[in-house]
Length: 342
Image (cartoon, rainbow, N blue to C red; front, top):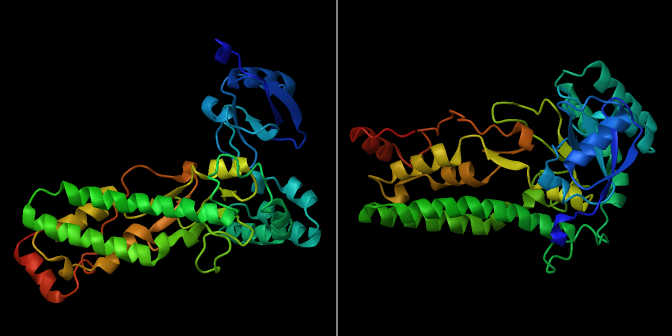
């Protein structure tokens, strides 16, 4: 019975058009919206709340997991918020590298729709890195709440987090192999699965992508731990410039779990079916496993995207048929049997 009574959660809330934040305590989202709209004098119809840090929408379930004093933005029906990187006022007052930030901010404001925004964001983040290093210190007990005790550093956990995602892709290949019905084909599919697993193991499951201590060429973040959304599969850059630093706080670490390593050429719809089709009449040795490895597990085909930019519809991108086999002979065999490889 006592589980019905929730403790009020204190948060800090602001509107989209002002920097001042207000303290509000609420037991659930309904109460938060009611109090927030009254305090900020906003219409309640269609009002919604998102994280100030990166614009993630706050649902009832998510609200209950927030840390005390989490900063939120209350939005009207048609308003959106892309995160702190769009709050130029905060950036200009938050860092000691004022001159560089002012110049970058002016560029962002005057040329908002230009591809140069990506470079501007990069410059802003680099200027903030010194401060971020302090915010992202390893001696952060709150950050490690809910994390297995075997992880002693943030980088170690983030590396494991990335490895886990990549291992999940390998499990899907294994499942497809085990589901193969024809005995002869199944033998080749299992060989292929084993080879891909060994290649992945040698690469340490590409956990370096989330590890800020790795070399710049190997990681997806800055040395301070900032990640930038790479946009939907069909985009060159993220138009909203979503960014997040999961190293900075427990809240950001949790939110980062909603970001996706999205396959441009789709894993389930295209890559795995193409691999299985190639093995219907060929040995695993005939198939270019390096190509399929890159499509399944590497940045050649993976894009890190904010949940808002994750397009779950069909991507309609196909595997390159000239890359599927190791030799011209194998490709000719495939053509001779009139097998269509997607």
